[in-house]
Amino acid sequence: MSLTIEEASALFPWNDEKFRADPYPAYERARAIAPVHRTTENTYVVLNHADTTHNAKLPCMRIAEPPSFATVGEHPHPWTAFDNTVLSKDAPEHTRMRRLTNRWLTPKMIGTWARLTHDFTVEALGRLAPGEVVDAHFDLGVMPTHLTMCRILDMPVGDVEGMFWALWDAMLINATAPGEGIHARSLAGMNFMFAETERYVREKQTAEEPGNGLVDELLAAHGRGELTWREVLETTVLLYMSGGPNPAYLIGAGFKLFAERPDLMAEFREKPEIRDAFINELARLNPVELIITRFPNEDIEIQGVHIPAGSCIKYPIGAANRDPAIFENPNEFDHNRPPEASRNLTFGLGTHACAGQLLARAETSVILGLIAERYSSVELAGDPLEVRTDRLVAFDKLPVRLS
Amino acid sequence: MTVVHVLYGTESGNAEMVADDIAAAFGDQGYETVTAELTDVDVSDLAAMEIAVFVSSTYGEGGLPETAAPFHDALLTERPDLSGVRFAAFGLGDSIYETFNNAIETIRAALLELGAEQIGTTAKHDAASTTPATELADAWARELLTLMPA
Ligand SMILES: Cc1cc2nc3c(=O)[nH]c(=O)nc-3n(C[C@H](O)[C@H](O)[C@H](O)COP(=O)(O)O)c2cc1C
Image (cartoon, rainbow over all chains, first blue to last red; front, side, top):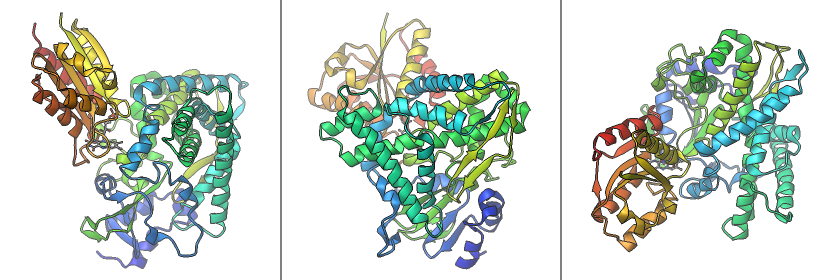
């Protein structure tokens, strides 16, 4: 069945509130029609798990938007601020940049960092009066994981809430069809993050004693002439800003699940051996970043659809993560799925897969483990509040009572 | 008793984890093991090792990981005589790349060229598979143990 561009585009109402809140039925309807849709002259949407996992990581799938997508006379995209990081680079430059952080996020190091997350969470829980309502998202999600990242980087804690919302604003521009005023708002968020971070990095640079974190290593490399100042700064912003918000969504989703399914909370408590699979399933159902985009620099074909070089391909992670061809009862939480039917794309894939995913998984496991072990129940003390675009989701508030 | 040297090159620590798993498997069988990153191995010490297990991921576009490249360069320039050395090889890669597990092949080729003898089969972990590297490492090490001199 062949749809016109208009018909295909109508399948994905990116800016519709209802679609954003729950895009899964729309993905399912679209997939039933075809696995690949052409939604604009040069944009394609791929819905199947198998097609996504195979194609999205092919070497020809470049990550940076080609110049042909820029509108003449328009301001540069706010995210060009990260042009000197792994976010915008392909191999071989990507490899060089990725190497800056690899050593800090090895499976061995993760154990050390997760112990810090554990201690920060214990402290936060220790401050709670019995029956007190706590914002599980900010106080038990963002804070412990942000503090952990601050230790890895050896950066000050800073204005955590201000930075959280600055990042949110900056991300708004990445919606498929951002509305009016979003460019300015994104730019302001971006500038705030960069200014805050730069101030701290400059302070570190002029400190009498060098610190012992990842940022100090970047600064030392800069001192040796191996990294530009922009590379130091952009990489620092990237890491500093991804420590809290991203794992916090996964952690918040865990709190919600515990509140809705006390049986699963009990299982998480009693069977530590299932925790990795449990977190993986939590990640499958709750991706933070909802769509990844790639720009093939060669003509390719996916499911018989010819896609010319220079097109934009959207891979909605949520669609792949709930593809019934791979996941039986795709909308159900089931941590007992066999390994070959549990691989999801929440942390991306291939070369650009999230470098911090082991850390995020470990942090989530540690925090949810502490909750399950110390409390018998999690109760929602109000409706969880989420903010969403078609590209990104975050909790705003997640009030819970632990008892 | 034979000392088993487990030598690894890594980018993001998976090969290090595998090296630890292999060393543990040999340790459990009473072998003395020494685990080292390839950056810390002097090529001239290699000839004195009776059994060396090489573990390496592949990085970039089929390249050696950062911590294995200088070692490989040194092998090719210093060209030690490795005729008494027996080695085993474990690679980590991702089958999505055309250069799947290229690095362990590069290391193997250099060792063979210098006269070392390989024991067992080359393991090739695939990050795109669902088998955890640890699992493959355990199974492979157990297999390797059966080939060891008593
Ligand atoms: C940037 C990047 C490039 C990679 N290039 C290759 C490659 O060319 N061939 C391959 O087989 N695997 C490649 N891989 C996969 C890694 O070898 C695999 O993820 C391995 O488990 C990493 O082990 P390590 O942590 O010890 O470095 C690449 C991975 C990344 C992140």
